[in-house]
Image (cartoon, rainbow, N blue to C red; front, side, top):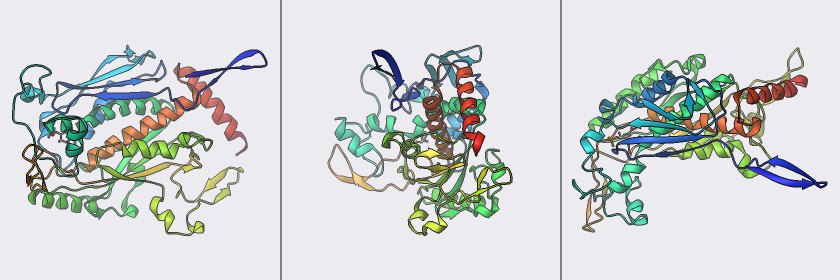
Length: 403
Ligand code: EPS
């Protein structure tokens, strides 16, 4: 990641900013033996709290509208590398969650031996099934659905929880709320934003009146064998101004954030700040005017930019929303095709959720936390926590001096 260059006969180096040092990868099938993630690039010397990771895993499992699987799993993380005596040591952090349901799937998910169990051949519209079997030349839709399943987000949440601990050590918090389910929206005026992150609700919704209607809507959908999508919002507080960059397209933080959120299963739209309203309202009602307080410090009365201007954090709260489509596994299945018989059939029915928007909001926190942690490591270096904290403090002191 270091680029060497010769300047005036002297060997100098510059850090290559486009190749982030913080990265992660997940592995595992939905009904396989376990799920794994490797997170590499966090500084050494970060104190980790195992309970904080497990708490987020449990939050992801919650939510009115979840299916039978969540009654089987009690997701708990095993930390297999990169941490000693509660602290990161700089090496890749391996995280593992065992699938309890594997006890019921061992034969059908065996790595070797003869195939067992019925093949899945009726593709579900809206899922990876149909394109997946053709692209990867598979004859059983299970070969596709096992990996495309949102069960994979368990590991994103584990990774995100570690990133949240890292951010917390730097005074940065990531919280979320569900703002809409199946067309039932919150009234932002009824939401006490100071309470976000306090987990007071089944649906991660902070407008009790809207939440009751959302639950009724989910109940109705379940009865009808249907599914529901919705919208969640992520807020990040305490970010320094200047993460990301206007200099190059792939360093713009809004692009990275949108990409990370769009990579979550079933997410079809992302809005930063006022988002699509920016296309409707005139500039005078969109841009966040700047004012000076008594001490000569800049402040804003609005945050329609959602904390990002020119691809960089601007020091305001970062606010981003994501829209989730309804889960494609319907108990009243949709019209589809059978990949074996080439006939028109009804799509397969896998046990699934009626609505998983509150779970997705926890995954959204995780992906946002990862992108913010990555931006911080990019800017301040990521070998040792003390060096990173010193660099961040020096930077904050510099940019805070005048304004
Ligand atoms: C999920 C586990 C899955 C589903 C859901 C999310 O478990 P199972 O397939 O055994 O019921 O509940 O997966 C999907 C919605 C999907 O489309 O694959 C989880 O752990 O979040």
